[in-house]
Length: 79
Image (cartoon, rainbow, N blue to C red; front, side):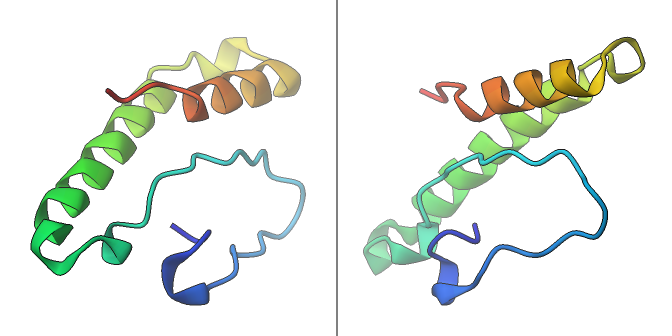
């Protein structure tokens, strides 16, 4: 949620971790009446993507393949 959430910058990670952008609309930016649903939607999107990540056979993938898989997860249609 670092893209627009309260103007925060994305965190800096030491070393050379594999990173990917999993864009999700900021639920805090929704109309106040729509915020509860927006937060539930954001949670569902993140949960789905984390579940997909957890299902990856990381021990069988090289770094480039992991990066490709993580990027693909970020393009997952959550509809």
